[in-house]
Length: 396
Image 1 (cartoon, rainbow, N blue to C red):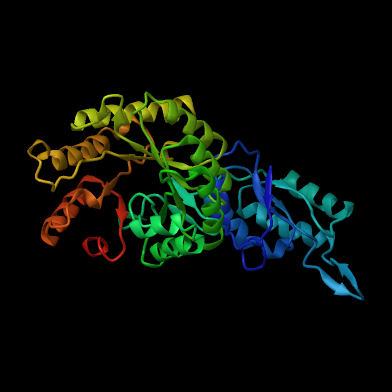
Image 2: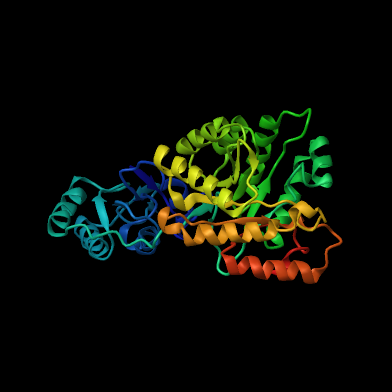
């Protein structure tokens, strides 16, 4: 049973909104989520409305006996038992509330006034919108599927992909690293990639430090970018919201995949899965789908995780490189996305979201070629994009 306290502005004391709290909590085996303390029932209508829109389980309502007043140096709660019962009954009739109680200022008489309210009213059925996959920061929740697509992942806070960021890491300039991540958010990214892997450094320690800074600063969710399960687990334990993990695959036979999913079971996160198995990266549409289906079954059946939190990356090599063996790589990737979308009824409830790497094109490729490829991808169901601000945004 989890109960949160919100201020009169509708957020928790740290600024977390109710939707973000639900995104983080929903995958835990909870008896209920609800509100307690802070305000009286007269100021709980809007917060409970938001909670009921986002959470499809049992909701609790445990208000104070009104807002406290300072009278002669004493905190006084002056809402009568009768008035508390009247307001709570109005809430119970409108929202799917299944647990009632009283917090600060309530007395046995207040609790007694709630007894007939519970007796007269059968809890309403849950009324939350359909869950389609979400991630969150400490402050806000974000849907994995953006309208319009695609969802954009800011890629520059990555020691492998950005020389400037790597130099900041080597100089242990955490504030500079944080500024790079913040710039991604300010220039339109929905999610912020965070990768601190670099030879000779303690990735686990660096990730823990960086994640604590990201918690306080970003409103966009973090994408934990690492191949090491212990680093991912450290990031999950340090993250104040529900992140996205990049990534899992079968390259090593599945050992790292299982270690990562065990961590996700304890610390909920969305997960990006790559179409790579023991034989390497899948090159054909059929092979990509075969691997995706294999991961899906483990994710949902073995670990009981929500399929809407699973994101597939069908991958491709540098399709603009000129390598003649890769002339149909883009076609195979597009067909893989089409196949997955078409076969989605075989993997019920899965979002079948995908990302595509901009740097598969070499720099000399023309804007026209990139624009055409984006249009073709969009028509297949592609909805995630690793993103360099001010470079790829003009195509979207």
